Amino acid sequence: MKLKLFVLLSLTCLLSACEMIEYHPYDGRIKGGKGINAKNIAQIEESCKGKKSIRFIFMSDSQRWYNETEDFVKHANKRDDIDFVIHGGDIADFGLTKEFMWMRDIMNGLHVPYVVLLGNHDCLANGEEIYREIFGTENFSFLAGNTKFICLNTNALEFDYSFAVPDLNFIEEQQNDDRPEYTKTVFAMHVRPFSDQFNNNIAKHFQDDIKKSKNLQFCINGHDHSLKIDDLFDDGVMYFGCPNIGKRQYFIFTLNADDTYSYELVEF
Image: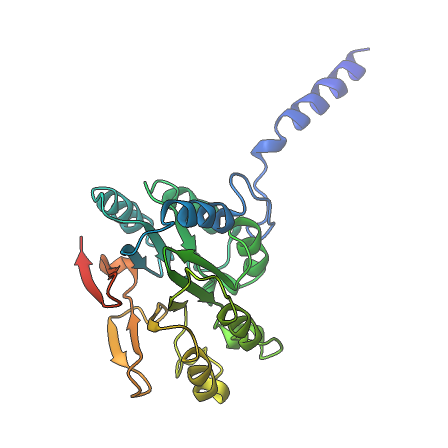
């Protein structure tokens, strides 16, 4: 009788303590919100409907800079003129499940909706699967006012060139959007052309393709961890590369009703 009682108590303790077990860091068990991008895109499109002037933040590469990202959220929340935030990718450093969840929970503190692009570090181990669960598909788009934001996976090296990265068919599909309110385009990506991660066999073809978009404004990217503002192909299309958030800097872009735009590099 005493032995049975001991066994029963032992099993009860084991079952009740299952939540205390530390699973493998790449286990993939996700707690908290999923499908973040789709939910936030719905908010962005609704809140920006009919707006002719849009102001958004572009920040990037928050990998391992948790304190700085928390400070960024606090700093961004002091403003009341921002419509949304785009995170340029590398939300994780090693593709760990907890990295994605920790950074998601920090970014959830923003007072405005945000979306997250796929970075090359996010692809490590089973990071692609975790990214898709928490944030969504690696190629996506949304309409903010009259501007379409086409957000691309450009991490070709991480996909061993076995998939179409960047996906030119996806770009063409987005360009064929015939909604009358769609009159301008911005491209967002983690890796810009001529990077080590980009499929530079098609860099020129990629540029020719994106220039077919309606009233292309500019391109934004992360990855390089430093400020880069240049006419990459000498064709008038500007690329804005954002420093990592560890440098405590981010961009604010304003898209004006007269088809002009302005930008500011903010330090915090």
